[in-house]
Each structure stands twice: as structure tokens, then as C-alpha cells.
Amino acid sequence: MPISTPNLIYSGKAKDIFETDDPTVLRAYFRDSATAFNAQKKGEIHDKGKINATISALLFQLCEKNGIKTHFVKQSSDRELLVKRVNIIPIEVIVRNIAAGSLCKRLAIKEGKVLKEPIVEFSYKNDELGDPLLTRAYIKIALEITDDKTLDEITNLTLKANEIFKEFFLKVGIKVVDFKLEYGFDKDNDLLLADELSPDNFRFWDAKTNEKLDKDRFRQDLGNVESAYQEVLKRVKEEAKNILS
Image (cartoon, rainbow, N blue to C red; front, side, top):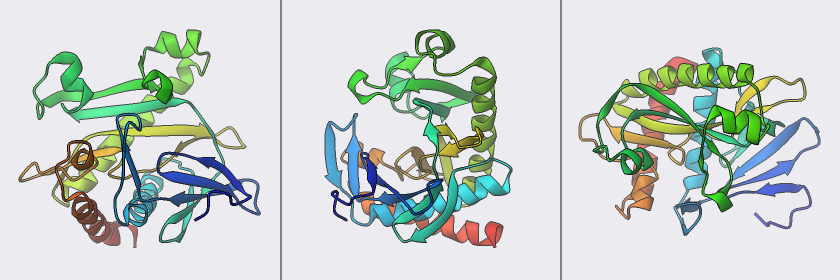
């Protein structure tokens, strides 16, 4: 899809966002682009856009079914979602169930250690700064982004989503290691879960083998990236058929 399309309002690492005839609704187009390490590593994964759009649509519906409001409206094509226009809060919310990635590097914890309870952390959504970790004081006082009430609501929603995802994926033989969420406010100032829900922002491991089924296969040059994404899609569709029908 040409980047010069007149109603393009944002082009990210793997998605393009377009206006629609409805000023309250946007169109999210999922590309096959793959990035890692704050876009220092780039590539393409065949059909990743189709896979991520479909997984995101199903998981957003799962959240809605369980009382978590999201920006999802509907999947309009194999690569596109219609979503409510929101003002994204420039904070990435990470929840960790099993030690992996940057947590292992920061604390010298062995990858795969199951944490006693989920950890929720915040980082500043800013690639130029390397998405630094944030304390609540940084968020409220230095960045003047939001308040305690909103941060509490975000934390509670994230922990609720974590339980929903862990239960759902365990049924299809997948461990939810960690994931990153984003939130925004709609025109009515309602807080909505936004962005996407896919192997791009989740770490998924096979429950029996611990095989990685997410973007770490791209980050770490493990190969079989496309087949891992396809496997997640296959399992998600099978279970979603039982829950969302």
C-alpha cells in the first residue's frame, strides 16, 4: 500500500494508520515489516501483517468479552482493523510472568525463571531515548503524563488482561512469558486498550518444549519466524472459535 495515500496520518514500525470517513474511527494497516532493538534491526516476515491483524482482532474480542474496553471495532480485511481514534498515552506497560529479555540483563536472572507474581513496569515510548524505564514519579511529575488514579486503572487492567491471556493460551499449549500493552483515551475520555496484541509484542513459549513462538526468533536469528507466527495464529483461531462464537 503506497505510503503517499492522502489520509495516512501515521506510519509506525509495522503499521500504517489512516483516517476514514468517520472522524472517530481509524484504519490500521498491518505491514510485513519486522524490527528489533528499537528499529536497529530490520527485515520482512512473509504474511506477518495478515497474521498479526487476525490475532489482534481475536484477542481484542477476548478482552471485550471479559470486560476490558479496547479500541477495536472490527477486522475489515485480512491486514486491516478498524479502530476507535484514541490519544495514545506515551507509556509502554509491560507485564512479566517469566524472566526473559531485558529483565534477565538488568538483574542477571536466568531466562525461564518463573516469577513469584507478575511484575508490571512502565517505559517511556520514545525510541530516541531507548524506551527508558519509568517510575511513577517520572510519569506524573517529570513527564506530567497522567495521575495516580489512571496509573492504578492501567495497572489493574493490565493484570486482569494478563490473567485472561494466561488462561486462554494455556488451553492451547502456550506460556505467556511477558507482553507490552498501550492505552489511550477516546473522544469520551474513556481509557481503552489500544495498539495490537500479537507475537510482535508478546513473548510466547510452547508449554511443553519452551520453543519460542514470537519475535525473539527474529531478534535472535533463530529461524522459522514465519512458521512460529503461523503456529500461534492456528492455535489462537482454534480456541477463539470455541470462546467467541
